[in-house]
Image 1 (cartoon, rainbow, N blue to C red):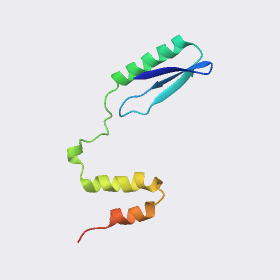
Image 2: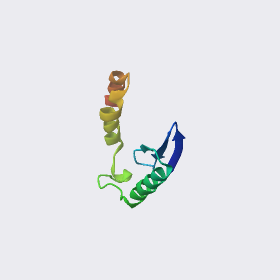
Image 3: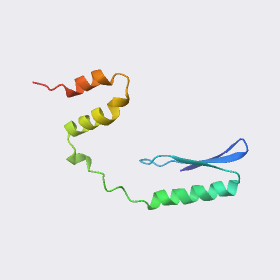
Image 4: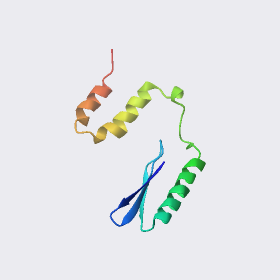
Amino acid sequence: MATIRKHRSKWQVQVRRRGKAPLSRSFVKHRDAVQWARQTEGQFERELPSRGTTPLSSVSLKDLVERYRDFISIHKRGHEVEKIVLDAQRP
């Protein structure tokens, strides 16, 4: 859904869709902002789901934990300790 608002002397448009990165852009004319919003929303509607997605039922918990450890946890402040906890195996 597009949000159009006046920001100082320009019109700011933000288009958000679930599963997509939000897009935003600024315009001098309101009609240009509305046109861009409609085009962008139309592109989102026409796009097919990416081919790299896997159904959740075929992904194991181990794979999910490893992906979290390798891609998400490394950006956190206590990632060293969290890595130790995630790598711990139960007897």
